[in-house]
Amino acid sequence: MTAAILLSALAMTLIVALRYLATSGLFAWATERVKPGFYAKLGPQIRREIGWSLASAAIYGVPAGVVAWGWQNLGWTRIYSGWTDLPLWYAPISVFAYLFAHDTWFYWTHRYMHRPAPFRIAHAVHHASRPPTAWAAMSFHPLEALTGAVVIPALVFLIPIHVAMLGLVLAIMTVMGVTNHMGWEAFPRALVHSRLGNWLITASHHQRHHESYQCNYGLYFRFWDRLCGTDKGLSDAYLR
Ligand SMILES: [Zn+2]
Ligand SMILES: [Zn+2]
Image 1 (cartoon, rainbow, N blue to C red):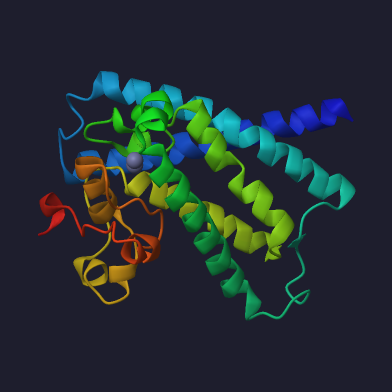
Image 2: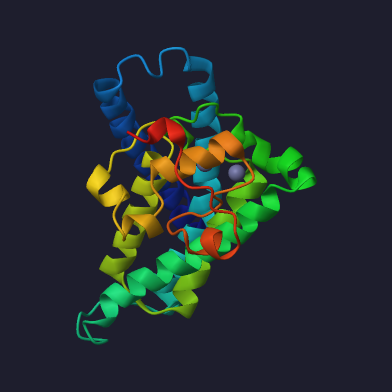
């Protein structure tokens, strides 16, 4: 049994690492197309970003692997796989609930990480990327990676979700983590500046966090930043 749990943790670590390399690699390639030479002088920084990110892959992979094993073998978690197990209208609600819960956790832990001691000990690693690149998506100190790693493995015990919707949540998490750091806005201007876009976080918003530090702490939504007066709008460099 111990071997099976270890194997599951190892497999999940590999999956998270490969998912990171594939997604960041894809958007780094796209960046070279859109902004040739943008990463040209950032070689040493990118190597550090990849190193921290691969360490984070293990920190994310181990709890996820243990929970995945428990789900398969002991009936842990509230993940379901039949489309009629719960009403169909619940599927999009569950995706939103996961994103909002993750966003809430991220906002408050991120804000805490900007206090002097936790910043110096942990969060400075993420902000050492100046400017961040597509490879910085998981570039966190192990202590900070740990605060992120527990979120989804905890939520699957609390909020029911269809396995495919969980896959969608993880895909959104991965793509937004990469695109928010890659140095340019991938979403159309019409969306970013729309009434809906005003509540969503894309690169234009997170870039400002990396420029000004004490603002724009959110992950997916601008809800908490707006409510707490920490929303400083979009990066001037991105307003086109
Ligand atoms: Zn960031
Ligand atoms: Zn920060």
